[in-house]
Image (cartoon, rainbow, N blue to C red; front, side, top):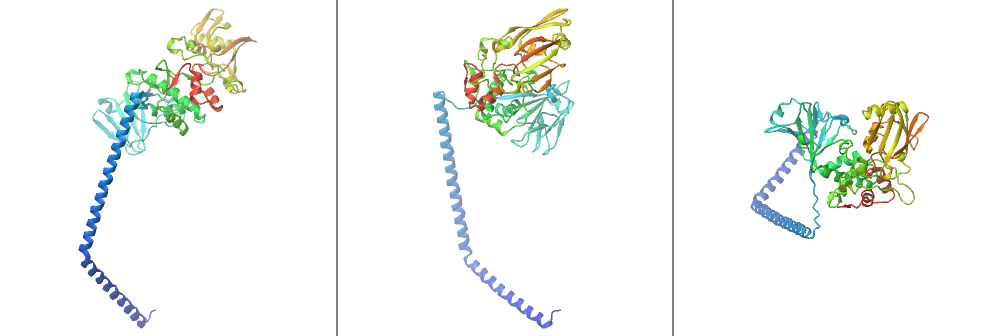
Length: 468
C-alpha cells in the first residue's frame, strides 16, 4: 500500500547513496594505485625481517640444545667416573597372558581392539584395523603361515584391549605389543613391554591401590626386584617369555592401572633390593601372624637366600597386624573329612586318620613337617606348601579372629598353626595368610600407617639388604 510519490523519493535516496559510495571507492583505488609500490616494498621488508628473526631463533635453539647435550654428556661422564650414574635400566619383559581365571596358556581365539586402530603383521604381510575395530585371531589364521603374528597400536600411547579376556577389572588393557603363537591347543598371547610399564599392571593387582603410599612403594620395589630376577631366565622358553600373569609369578593386569600405584612405580623408578651385590627374589605374602619365616620352610635354606630371616613384625606396643582378620584363625576339621583330604592330597591310603601331629617347627613357628597316622598306615608331609596342600580342600570351615566364617580353600591359610583333637574333630589354631616368607603386604601397610617409610619397611622384612 505504498504511494507512488513515496516510492519515487526512496529511489532517489538509494541512487544518491550509490553515487556517494562509488565516488569513495574510486578515491581509494586512486590512492592504492599511487602507493602500491610503497606497499609492496613494505611487505617485502616485513617478510625479510620475519625470516631473519626466525633464523636467529633457530640458531639460538640449536645452540641451546647443543649446550644442553654437552651438559648432559658431561654430567653423565662425571657420574660414571664417580660411580653415581643415575641412568635407570628399563629392560623388556615378556609375559604370557593366560585364559580366564588364569586356567590355561592357549586361547581358543583372541580378540583385540585399540582406540586408534591396530597394526597386525606377520613376515612381510601387514594389515591395519580401523579405530575401535575388533580384530579376532584364531589358530587357523592364514597369517600364521608366515610366522608369529605381531599386534601393536597404530597410535603411540594407545593400549591394546583383549576383548576375549575377562579379568577382575573386566576387559584388560595392555601397554606395549602382543605376539601371537600358533599351537595345537590354540593361540598363545605374549605381551612384550618395558619393566616399568609392566609394574603399572602388577602393583594394583597385587596390593589394593587404596593402601598407604609408602606401602605401595614397598610393593613396587619388591615386584620390580622379583621381575628383574625372572628376566634372567625364561619361564616359557618355547615362547621366549620370562613369566606369565598369574600367581605362579606375579599377578599382572587383573586390576586396572591406578594413579596411586603408578605414582609408587614412578617414585621408585629402577629401584631394586640387593643382597651381596645381587638383586634378590623378593618374595611376599598377604598377612603375617606377627612373625615371618625363612626359605627353610620350602626346604631351601641356601646361603644366597640368607636375606630371608625370621622377623618380628611389631613395635613396642604390639604386632602391627594384631587387629587384622587373618592375624588369627581357627579351622575345625571332622575326622572323616581329614581322612578324605589326607588320602586324596598325599595320594597315600592310610585308612581312617587316628592322629595328626606337627613333628617339626621352623623359624617363626611355621610347621615344617606333619605326620598323619591312620588305621592302615601313616604319611609324613614336609615343607609349608605341601602341608597346606595336604590339609586344604573342601568340607570344613575356617573362622577368622573377627568372627567371619568362610569355607575351606585349596590351601590351608598358612602353615603357622598348632593341632589339637576335640570331640571327633581336629582343631587347627593358626595365624596369618600366605607362605610367611619375605614381605607381609598387610604388615607393610600397617607399618606405613604408623609413619614408617618404604626403606624402613623393606629392611624390616629383608635382612642385611640395600635398596638402590
